[in-house]
Length: 494
Image (cartoon, rainbow, N blue to C red):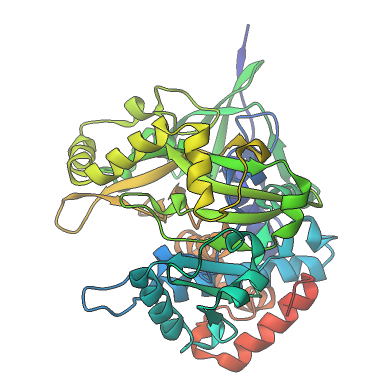
């Protein structure tokens, strides 16, 4: 039999023990050490969903290799706006992690971040032309000045032997870009380090096996209804952050804030091919990204990808998208249906009608067998043997459905913070490149929801993120200085 009890009021409730909540918690405690913070996690340990190492690509998204961040416009020019923004955002993450390493909060940076070159690889005249134009556009900015480009098979083979061996390069044009400054990030390991530090501080606690059942406004506070195996607890908090991955939409809907009206979610599952042959793994040291299939969501851009997890090298290919009505890997098949209401049914239907290519793509991916996945792998690794690869289930992602300025339902890729008008509650929706840009996302959230604290903490913010308030694209000397310092502190190639 369960009992219900109330506990003392806290300043901040963080829902979910993933990279978003962990980062926000550390930032807030660094800015205001006396804050009382309570974290609630539905599962029995942290970083099990989107933040877990095998649930995401761990690319350390800096727009070096992701072709979907640099679309080609109708006039043939390359739009690099998103690439610049993401590169700057990942720079903020590197600065914050450097601050934590220098303070001794993170003991060994190699436990979560390692140097792995980032590459883009394409074939066919049209794609080669696109990649060359992309390279020329990005090279105009100092943040990409070290990028290399080649159409020469011998050069590309030096960068990534597996993608050239067995390929008839004399029959088809190929090209690649190479960025030595790329990284691989284990966001699960980083989350655990941050939470270990956070819970060592006064007035911070974390409760596992604790499901948030409801969010109710009580005066200027939020009453957070928590269910644990033994009891139910009501917590009063001045501020609530919903960092529950795919579960955030449901909880924000329960809060009844008007800002969530019209939002829906489109769940996309994923699988990897994971290499089991240590000799093959040892021959590849790069993250090689290609062009997405027609209709594919951005997180399904194919890549042959070196990972470093728990000190060991690994190799994966994918992800292969799939459809499930779950909003979380450990969620319920009823998640999608429970999220549909009178305020978002219109945008959801509109998105369904406007994205038939995506629907066809997902059906095709769901039906793809192991051998079919290996055939897709052979486009990037021609000599691949299916016996060397096994299926690994990736994380579940929920893409944002919302109304555009004309009231039409649109499917939005990326991440979005939804917050109440008074800044007392906020939640994160969406997917890639979320984890890599967590610090930037949380800094914007603090500015929105804690404006007085943000204004009072300018010196501290600049201590943690030296470029805070500036755009690195406009400050080449500072950008180079930060790159050198963060590379040294994080033990990365420079």
